[in-house]
Every structure is written in C-alpha cells, then in structure tokens.
Length: 262
Ligand code: DGL
Image 1 (spheres, protein in one colour):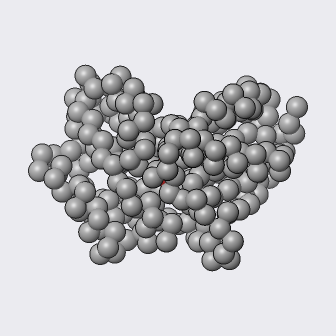
Image 2: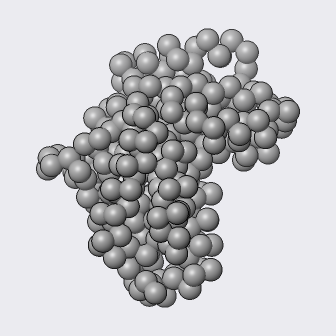
C-alpha cells in the first residue's frame, strides 16, 4: 500500500505538463508532486506510437522507483498512445491521463464551431477520432495538427512575431467564419493562451482540460484512501531528462507563469 505522503508523479514529453501541474497544485495543494519533463526526447508527437509507449514506460518506471503514489500522464500524445500499456503494467496504480476537452467544449457551445489544436499524433490517433465521432452530431469540431508549436514553449518563447506568425498561418483559414471555442489539445498550449487570443480575437472561449484532470486525480486518490491528510502545503520537485541547468530554471518560470489572457 503506497504512503499517502508520497508524491504524485506528473510527466510530459517536456515542459507543457507544467500547465496541468499548476492546476493540480491549485486543486490539491496539500499533495507533494514530482514532475518529470522528458525534454531530451521531445517532441513525442513526431515519433511512432511504439516509441511513445516505450518512452512513457521509461518515465513511469523512473518516477515510481522514487516512490510515487499516483501517476498523471500530463501529455495528450502519450495518453493516446500509451495509457493502456501503462494501466496493464501497473494495474494497482492510480493513473490519470489527459484528452482534449471536447466534451466540455461541446456542452458549453452546442451547435458551435470548435477548433481543436493538438499534435499530429493526437489528431490521428483512434482515441481522438472516437471522441470526435461521439460529438460530431452536436457541434462542428475542426482538428488542426500543430506540428512544431510545442517547440516554442520548450524554448520559453510564449509570445512575439515568430510564434504569432506560426499561429496566424495555422488559424487564419478557419477564422473567416466565426468560431465559438478553441480547445487546447496539447498541454504545452495553455502557455500560448495570450498569443492564441491575439490571433482568434475576443469572442471564442479558449478551453483546456486541466481542471477535469485535477478533479479526476482527486477522485482516484479519494477512492484509494491516498489523499494527503497533512494541513501544510506540499512540495513540488522538478526533474528533466535533459542534463542542462537552464531547463530547471525554465520549468520553475513556467510553473509561476501567469497567463496573459483568459
Ligand atoms: N504536451 C504534449 C501533449 O499534450 C506535447 C506532445 C509532444 O511532445 O509532441 O501532447
């Protein structure tokens, strides 16, 4: 039986999952967290599904060997490719994955026009295609594969001509007809909320799935009797597969980053 004071492990292909970590800390502030960014192997979105499965197993193994009591896969790309294998490998462990927040977007904008930005792998994977098919008769869901976009966040570039030029090229063709919502289907993209807002204008709601993930983690820990009963704030530790001191500084900076726009 794991110790309830043990950390919750959170991992992503790089720094994007820190957008999820921020929400976990807001929702469950007493928990301790161990965040691992696999920046050495980022991006996952251009790899084969089998490579993503192998990298995810390596990351999980690394985190669980440090005594983590639960695992949050804060990466839509890894969730679509690897979550089944992770659950089979660790059947007792509370494992929470991510998926593009299509359901809340459709519930809030029935009949609406919804753009969904994600990596090419997330867009192509059967998991997303099934999710889309489930809601296709309730809204117009337009997936846009944004290969190369997460790399800006990995470099700490969250605004400016280059990233905004990229977003303009990608999104402009869809903006001629008004859109109701933009779903951020990659955990790196919440850090680009301000840049995305400048391109899409004030009208569409920009939605990411972090709150849903935090609530799901809370439920899973509760079910397993693993919520940390302490009454002090937990600690957050950052680790990265890239052996560069600057990367840990960037992780801290993103953790404390305040979004530019709603
Ligand atoms: N943050 C990851 C996601 O949510 C980025 C994927 C990648 O490494 O390509 O999908």
